[in-house]
Image (cartoon, rainbow, N blue to C red; front, side):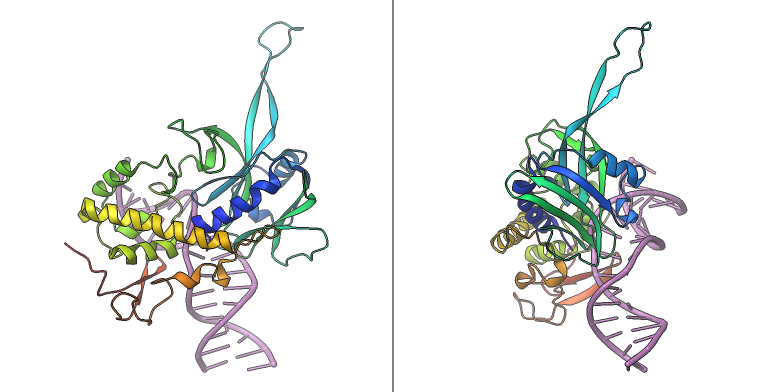
Length: 318
DNA sequence: CGTTGGCCCTGATCGC
DNA sequence: TGCGATCAGGGCCAAC
């Protein structure tokens, strides 16, 4: 279940390898992994093959690799025959979303195929020679896509990993994440005050704040002592501020732990193996003692997901 | 327009 | 041992 910290581990691991690398070939083994790509898989392969990768950028749980080969878009000649038609450039990127179970693995050609391999890119890298970039995904909720880059609404850098104010079109509606220096705290609190919904649903709404998934939502709510179904409008400003601070602490802590266990040869996002699970206080801890008060943690069904919380520490306050 | 419920997807695990 | 049922949830979209 990769959330912001896990995706950032992938981004920071990919960046030094893919920057300046040339895509030699593309193999699509599972067409459904291109669900977010507009057009057939042949189009995906054609546009990616031969392109130079310009880095690795992340906003929330979305990752993208800007492509430095621009496409020339011929404008129809408006004048008489013989006049040279003008052309403009179109910037685009390889967008990656890991979904629930996606992994991006950097390997060499001697390593065996993963049975869940969906898409493979062969890269010519500047320093590491030929490298396989394998997109592995059990549940096929993740995807790759080629998408146009468009300007950000606020003109600020689109995400972490680049100063460019260009964002893939399909990511433009995704809010900045709480670790983004351009994240607008005041706007976040203003929207919470106006929403008619529960706080956990708001935390999981990627158009309000991005990067938070079920695990870190439960962890931040536990740390801030807020019940998952507390109406957002009833949350006082001080408590909302505390909650946002706890979100940042939880994400930052997981990020720090992920950074230490990262192996440069192997970009690992295996959430199922409990990547950061050794530091969880609430998620998956149903039946265990609350680390703060000792009473048992409870698991509710909420939004078709599990919600883990301490009924004593986290009560709805009217 | 804001909000919400349902859907997609399949390997791993569990219970009988 | 075999096999069906159950579980996991991010993002999107139809429906209200």
